[in-house]
Length: 354
Ligand code: SF4
Image 1: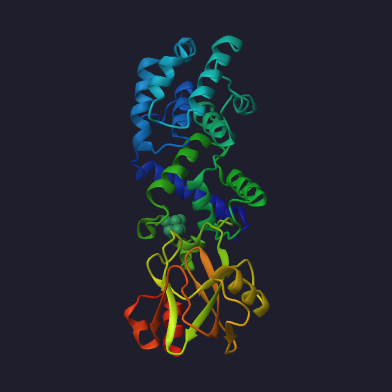
Image 2: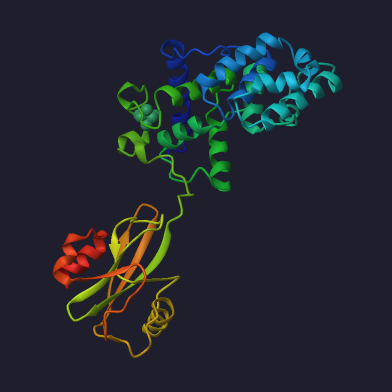
């Protein structure tokens, strides 16, 4: 990663230049200096897409042109106007903050970052946006767009969703900020992330591609990194291939679990690797076989299968029964007929190889 000041300066300058000449992203609150309107737009956009938030913003500004108008409105009217936006705690906080400003601050919106941050429902991102857009104070915004842009131009593999990652990105965002034009810079980097350095970036149209670390290494789609991946569940499937002479016990999977409607052998699922003794015991308890009814013939065969959110550990036990026992849900079919039934991939492979 570049640590020299020259690199961050180059990006900031190039970004501001792009913003002056090529950034055509239009939004009604862009260039707005009224902190009330900026605050309103930011709260609406907290969990809402721009296209959806736009009409709500316009309706709110039309109905409540000033913060005093909003503060004086009955709860019901404000909630009705918010209807359809979801996350109603935002609306509750909006009203509480508007009434606090109208009553306790004589209707004057706070003009210092620390005071803005104290308003109900305002976090560090929103406070930085208001402080920089309305009051030109040097606070860098750090939203999903900014994380993505910084991770790529500097090639940072540190996860953005850890405490340390957030702290380091926040420090870097502060270093990158234009001290002379913090509001314009903040809006520009978010516009750049939303229109060029998107999740699938348009590097061919990017003014910084000759210096972007991720692009130069072909890593742009791998960044930013998140630590919290979707948990992969590990499972242990122990199949007992019960055979009597030439027939095998199989059953259709009916539960809403994986492989619904495919066939399988008697299954004993355990929470970890199981011993032969445990399998014997479960075969007795679950399928009604007594200890002498079944003879385990062969060493177990083990394999693994990875699914999107699961890893299945398979163990197959071949066992001979003394009779064709009636097991609820099971049918007994000949080995050669097994290919008429659909089986999950690993079971199919097992059948072919045995
Ligand atoms: S070159 Fe591509 S990845 Fe790098 S900043 Fe530009 S758009 Fe983003």
